[in-house]
Length: 310
Image (cartoon, rainbow, N blue to C red; front, side, top):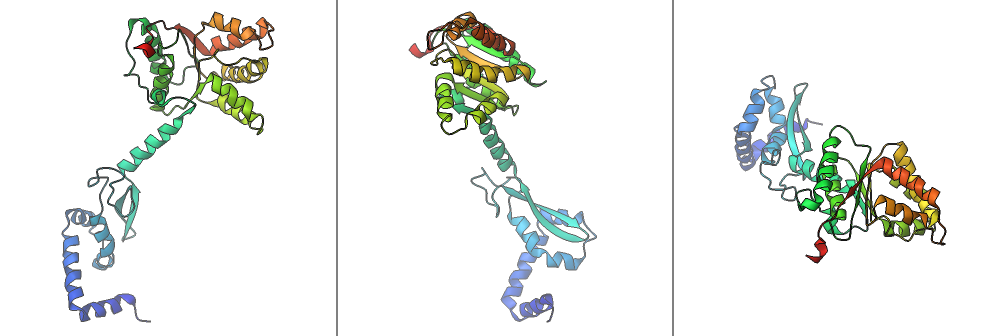
């Protein structure tokens, strides 16, 4: 069988129009500033290698380099969306490969960051909360100061204590949790936000499909756990001791922070936890839960205007 290259050459010689187009494209490619620079960096390349790889060189010239011709990932003009071409030389051979472009890297990073915040039944407004969006009401100054202090420590490692934010309805406690979670994700730290009444229902329903241990383990090991509106759930001794107690015990031992919001102060919550749904008073067990909470969070009051009425 005759070599393909020699046959192709003969065919080109017999087809004058093709030859003219080929020569035109060849001149365009070899006079392209990027190709000229590439070839100047590799003077060792033989002429036949350049001829053989004109298609690769042409493909390189038609592609956007690191988004220089693309407004967004969706508007990428390249053959492989989100990937930028790279020319290289190995053993005197020209190679064309592709790497992720800036737009794809940013897109994937944003997608990964979104996955860092996981929530059960949290409204969209909370999931999009920001530190800049916090109203600097003087009555919330202590809470803001504590939040900034916590976030300031994150760059040196995750603090072992979160915050226990308590106060009346509508003062922005849950918004604070969302803002903290979104700030943490910038440091690639995941947060689990849980609305306590729904969390209790979720755990009870998981008994039926035998996934309770898996879910409890997940809550135990989240980087940062956030329990919103603790004390508002329908209380049971089983949930308090076997679920909440297990999760808090693990996080206390592993020095993993927990954030809480509540309408109760810690003393008031202890009284609430002591009352079982059967009407019994179990002060010792409630005290054990509160001791764990104090080890993993700092109590901070918030008393300001009700923002839901404004």
